[in-house]
Length: 398
Ligand SMILES: Cc1cc2nc3c(=O)[nH]c(=O)nc-3n(C[C@H](O)[C@H](O)[C@H](O)COP(=O)(O)OP(=O)(O)OC[C@H]3O[C@@H](n4cnc5c(N)ncnc54)[C@H](O)[C@@H]3O)c2cc1C
Image (cartoon, helix red, strand yellow):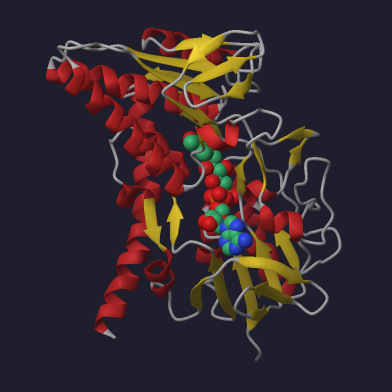
């Protein structure tokens, strides 16, 4: 019997889950393509920036991960440039790969708005590991420079975080919490660190429940983060950020977490897209024109009761669970399942030892929520690590 040739483009949260599940069916032969050699756990990036994690703790090697299956998963580090849907081929700059079924799980990228002068030149994004690493080093170096200067001058470090969504809030809180601890632990005299969170909306965490918004707002203020709501960055220079209100803030460095957009591959694909440029799928997560092509995760937008479901790792994994079942069903000529994806919960890290959470309708915050967040992260890491370890052993023994 012929095997089902399945290509998954993108080894992020959605892609890896799909691979894990599809691999259980020995009839499936899976090729994972990613432009990077690693999976990047973006949900833990706040800990990377604040030195709680090193880069090995937020990455999983995709080659060893794929080698950990029973021979039906292959990994190729190549960037997909386009797809020839008519002839069922994924095109990279090196080769064309044939498929029976295709899963597009390429995520999204930071949207550096072109109407904000200097944004791309002077601000850092955190959705790509190399950018997050660069920012982390810059942050550490700035702290070190102030320590060196201590005794002669004590200039404050000014950090601007633009974007009051989940990532902006978590990063601002974690940096504030880390630097407080850093100064306290070492008894440094020069302790001035100004973190300003610039947010376009009326309040931070637009779209989340009032209780979570209030808890996060209070916690950020306790950590000394200044929140500037209803303002946008309009011009960025090497040393300052001008806001829509006319204020000009001094800036040593800036993180831009003010929005995402579909990435380059999605732009190139000849598929139906919505007004924001994301791939449009039907209730079974198939693309509009090709029943053997699925799109999951941040590169698509899904709705529940006409409301957009927030693009999160949790949403991407739930989509993966429907997607793999539908591929197996399609191959076996069975009716497809429809998705009813909704957010199962949200855990917001707000500095060391503190988080705010809503899980299955229950709210909690403080140290307990922080521990729950850490457990969720560890369980995820462990799942991938076990597979990776298995792959590593096989490669070394073979
Ligand atoms: C700072 C931060 C904090 C966050 N916190 C949370 C949180 O607490 N909880 C939560 O649920 N979500 C959180 N998110 C959101 C979450 O990370 C995303 O929703 C999730 O990563 C989406 O998963 P995905 O599989 O769609 O895409 P991704 O995880 O982005 O993976 C996409 C993959 O596709 C690959 N790729 C892209 N283009 C190509 C190409 N052309 N060819 C080959 N490979 C390609 C990339 O290298 C990448 O490996 C956070 C995000 C950020 C940035």
